[in-house]
Length: 95
Image (cartoon, rainbow, N blue to C red; front, top):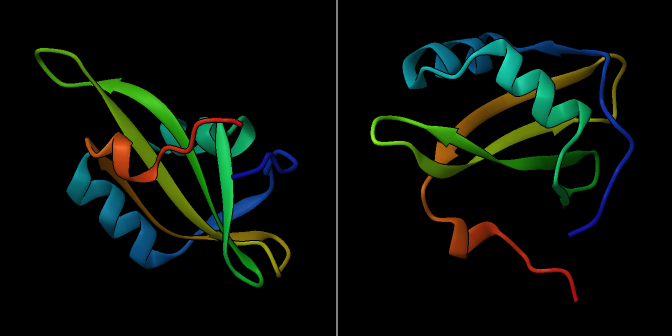
């Protein structure tokens, strides 16, 4: 995984808004993950996933917030977003 430029100009698709509401993910969390992602990975040409570790729940646990973004358009479009506890599956240690 690599670092990419911060994404500050974007729009949320209707699907992304629906999933954020359903999964109780705030727009502020998405904005933070896009502005300063800990890791990014190209999914396919024109689409990246930006991910950052976040604290959530009671008791508080560490999750991975994954934001899928089409960067081949202006403004970039957030396609979907989710939070997962499976850090070991998606997190890549720097080598």
